[in-house]
Image 1 (cartoon, rainbow, N blue to C red):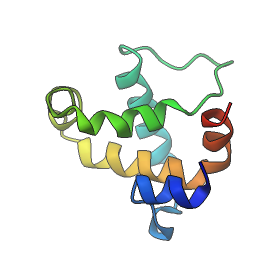
Image 2: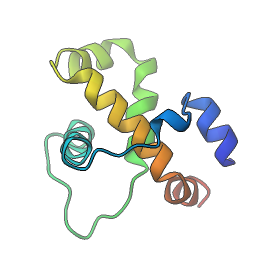
Image 3: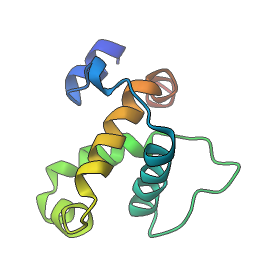
Length: 98
């Protein structure tokens, strides 16, 4: 997969290239916790492919409503996940293409 294909698949554009340190860092941890049964990321886990798994979960509307849309901050979590793809695409592509 190329950067262009990745961005097209997840509807990423240059407006997603702004990382708001305090807010997005917090929300990225929350997205991680949603994808890992409430656990915090271990210090030695530097993977980011789970953000793609999170975005792919939108296809499972029952799961998405229960785990994401039921939260007051769900829009922020979604935006942060798109920002993660935009800012970390090189690492994501490396993990996807292994």
